[in-house]
Length: 262
Image (tube, rainbow, N blue to C red; front, side, top):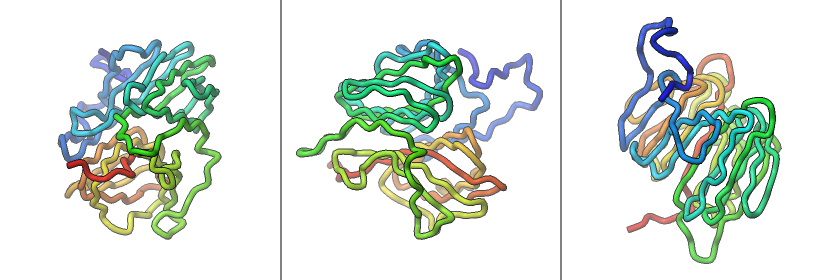
């Protein structure tokens, strides 16, 4: 086991401390400092970290991975598990039974639960990616389909009726009940905040791509910044307040389009 930021007892300059907060089945904050590289079957020449998981109360699994040149995975998802990969930086070749594509920064693939996908870094530079896996909840008469695209080609949409907070959808879940989840980008101008404290049935996994925030999680205001990961369980009171001088952007998952199972 080694640390993702490669800091160890021999080269650490600052005092030991953490902003991470672990409240299982409620919320979890994981900062980059101190997270480990996990040895996971299938990931070759990759530095991969498991972030969200059922062990913290999530119904899904989230990962970040630095894929070195020649790095690859020959099968993610399938057998009832839907999967998603987003290229934060660098380039990757991806493929499933439906499609094959070269993804640049902003590129992504969603692969349905009956179709595992693979990736390979065929370039000479590292790629950094976010990966999501979840057991698909079927709905009679509908099905999800492979989506391969680049989020940079998608227009920002006004969020909560104000152009100072905007969003993008990765998947067509708002119009297609075949999808039981979606991925979103949310962007705040500095100083902008949610119009209310949200409390809802859906859970979230969130990875912060840019900027800084104060985030209300349950009754706690937590400082967050680029590289932080957050899990929010169902019904968690939550709201975001963007701080600093830079736009705040984060990617997050949300389950949708299904009734409560009794």
